[in-house]
Each structure stands twice: as structure tokens, then as C-alpha cells.
Length: 201
Ligand SMILES: Nc1nc2c(ncn2[C@@H]2O[C@H](COP(=O)(O)OP(=O)(O)OP(=O)(O)O)[C@@H](O)[C@H]2O)c(=O)[nH]1
Image (cartoon, rainbow, N blue to C red; front, side, top):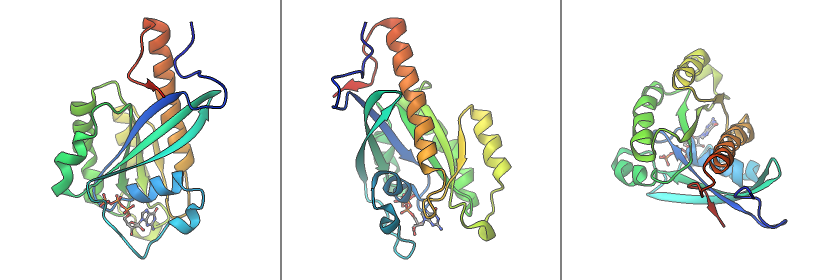
């Protein structure tokens, strides 16, 4: 029996939906740009902050353990006024990148609430990775690394401190998340022999 996603050589076979979540200004857009744009060094700008209005998405084609994947990354707006709209995109997602800013305590304290939103809208089976972003700003740190690690451990999810600015751990975070999603898709297919929520494309 063929595993979903092992399509014809050379074309993306599995569509994965991943959503960025977290408070405003933590760096969600910067992380997506760093990961998806080939010339990301030029793409990062610390001088101009443009809040995401509504929703945006980017696509990146990757190969995971020999499986070609078309990764759709939905970048939500963290501002409170967009909360209902942003969380409406949580439904149907297989993975979440939940971000806080290590220099902003409120953004860390908001993680539990985001986690609740994610499980309410996307179910308990979704894969989540927790990121403490802006780790290049060590002198402004207010959230110790061990606190991020502990929170992630309590929720049973992977944790990375990242910097979109310096390109620290961004690739690794997406790699761990997408591999977990792929494993789940393949396991679900092997067990039930049904199409999972991942779509062939
Ligand atoms: N020093 C530093 N600044 C960062 C980093 N990531 C993002 N920033 C800055 O933080 C600000 C907000 O970044 P965004 O990526 O727009 O944040 P966001 O979470 O998408 O914000 P919303 O669209 O309002 O939800 C910008 O000025 C970025 O340049 C980082 O890793 N290090």
C-alpha cells in the first residue's frame, strides 16, 4: 500500500498546513520570511515593523525522509483585534509554530492561552513547536531559557530559542515540526489505511 505523499518523483506530493501563532511583535513574520525566502539576510529588517493585517501565507517545498512536501505556512496577526480572524485559520492545521519573545514577559505568559486556542480549534492531536525568539537580544532578556524549556516540557512539545535576525534554529524548528507531522500522517495511514487530514496535491 502506498503511503500518502509518496507521489511521482519530482513533484510535491503532500500538502502540509502549518500556522504561526503568538502575540503581536514576537517575530512570526520575520521567522516565516527567514525560513521561506532564499535571500533572507536582505529580507530581515529590524528598523521597520509592519504588523500583519489579517492573514498571509507562504509556500515552501521540502523533502522529508524522501517524501516531497508542499509546506503551506499561514502567518497570523498577533494583534488582539485580529484574534478571532487569526484563530479561525487554526482549524484544519496539522502543525503550529507558537512564538514568544524572550525580551517580552507578556508574550511568554500568553503562551498558555494560545495553546488553549490551538487545541480548541485544531484538536489535541496537532503538533506544536514552541519558540523563544529574539535570542540575539541577550542583554534585554527577561524570560530565562529554562522557563521556556519547562513550559514546553509540561506540554510535551519541542522547544527552541531562535533568532530570525541571526538565523538561529529556524531551519531546525521547522524540520522537527514537519518531521513529526509526517510521522503522524504515515502512522495514521499505516494503521487505518485512510486518507489523513494531509491532502495530496
Ligand atoms: N533582534 C531581533 N528582532 C526581531 C527578531 N524577529 C523579529 N524581530 C523584530 O521584531 C519586530 C516584529 O517582528 P514581526 O516579525 O513583524 O512580528 P509578528 O509577530 O509577525 O507581529 P504581528 O504581525 O503584529 O503579529 C520587527 O521590528 C522585527 O524586525 C529577532 O530574532 N531578533
